[in-house]
Length: 521
Picture 1 (cartoon, rainbow, N blue to C red):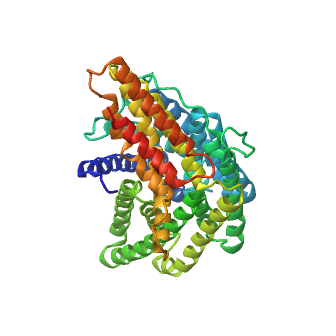
Picture 2 (picture 1 turned 90 degrees about the vertical axis):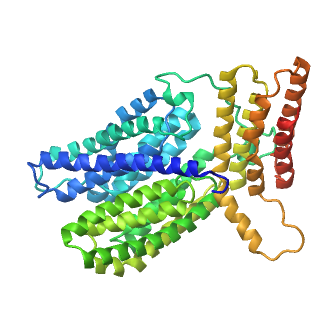
Picture 3 (picture 1 turned 180 degrees about the vertical axis):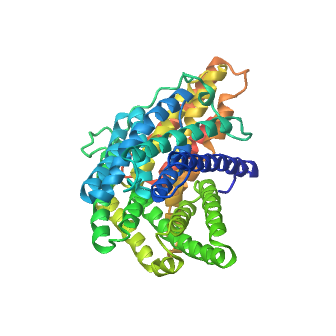
């Protein structure tokens, strides 16, 4: 978090506020339309209507965090999401009506999208779209009400998806005009995006842990992570049904949360620890808030206050999620605890009494996720870092040959490098935690260089690239050629340091050498 200005934090808060407001509007819209479809009352299908409103909220929040290259891409996803959501609604119903079949379909629906990443960006986006409503169904399955018309459930599920996408679409347009938001030309392009530098070829040595130029015999990381997710979720369903029959979804939800967005086995371990700490804080906060509300307000007022607290918590969690996953873990537990009390599925006494059981279920779910990521075709965190650093260095090599007199080419090159740097930064929290563990150990002599030091060495690269791309216009062609050659040679040395076995000190020196080459005249 250090090094960021107040304006950046304020911009993040404003974006989180807009996305949360869209989710609240989607929730309210689905509720009001659902009441209208019921003849002006929620009686007889209140639980079903509540689930549909929660579904719209979860879809809006998840969709609001996703990035889309153009408006047309968002429009295509928005058109497909309600259909995918309807299928996910069927899976959610099966989780209640025929649990084994529902669980099998849920595991497949969560694992296959991860495997689809190997087929490129479009397939990865489609896979993410498939997983999005399934995640919502795990939190809020919309079940047919026994005394309601059969078509009502289908309409509510479709309505939740359509309403959520419409509100998120409006939120995206608002975000484009907010001051302080980083925008590229792609954000405002109606259809086509500006030309991008060619994507570097896949570096097998940096992604699979093999020798440079040696053929990889390992499965692709996406395939391994998909199998890990499948094993973790399957085990979570089985253990949940056997050990926690009334709260099995807590085990499944935790296993999914710690394995989703897997960036290596160290990341899963780090996320699991934050999930447990955040869950403990969220449960305690929910019990405290409910106690205060119950003693100071009428039931109707406390119910409305609970809804307000839920959306305030979602705003704070959405805002702070990028700084630490613990904030989001706390928010998820707090919101789900309050929802259980608002819908009558848990009372204050019951909430306090199930604290130990809930925490145990969360610990078990995290342990299953850790076991799957560490023992089922594990993906080493250092290999993920090597792959992302390889992509960054390839983007820098492309940027080095950009004509400094071409503003559009400079902008495109800088966008590519910024995106690659952001992907490297995503790995920092888990590696930073590893540095804290190393610092706590008694040791003689100097601290060894760690992977987090290599991530820190990436930070000066964007500013150095700016200086390189805006170098003095008086340079001769020979001077420009010499500068480009120095940068490409430095990049080549840094790429050589990515080979197995990785020496973090040599790799950090290589990255620092690239920074110096970009800054030299």
